[in-house]
Image (cartoon, rainbow, N blue to C red):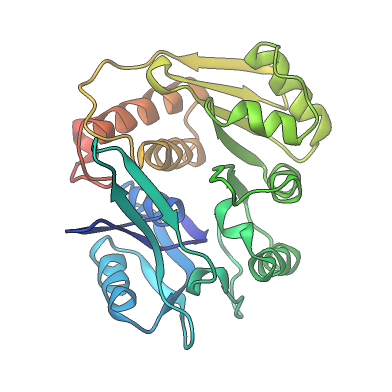
Length: 288
């Protein structure tokens, strides 16, 4: 599988340490662990974190051919501070390099395009992604509707729903997503999925991650619903769990596995990730 991941590469910067992340980066790294040939489409600043980002991309086996350096912008950061009770506060910096992702030539022949909603906070990126979709054919388009207040809008959420063949939403974000789409939240997951599919004829598959309760999938072509229970683990950190789920699911799905087995595999990978502090811990697929 050849995949293109569009969006942010950023760093969570604490007073005494920093970690690379961003949903598109985490997704790409986990997809590469599943044997895919993955290219990042992003932008970095010409700074220390930009150079460190390139090193991390290569460490995880990701191609950086489509990662550009922006002269007058710094690399993406989320500044994390702790209050007197140890509760973290997040400051996701704006107007950084990944808000200016440019589309180059020769971006065809990809089996999969992935993007999340955070990178669409800038009009520049929204225009770039529209151009990318209009000029290229992708086997599947996977959108992760990852709401990060205040960086979302009705327009960007609708864009995700209207341009993806596969969409992933977490149960925590689902009520707000439905509100932005002018849909009521009181129905079952299956009924909500039917409504989403009716309003977005391009959708083939809807994925809902349910935290400790597992995951749900709806096949929009057959109107069949699937689910898998959550796995009990000692949670160290939930950072990157949804990204690992998405990558593990789509890897198996595009290899032709049935939806139930895809859900089970993705849930096992996500459960392992949350039992570690790293968003991309070391693991081998033979263990799953």
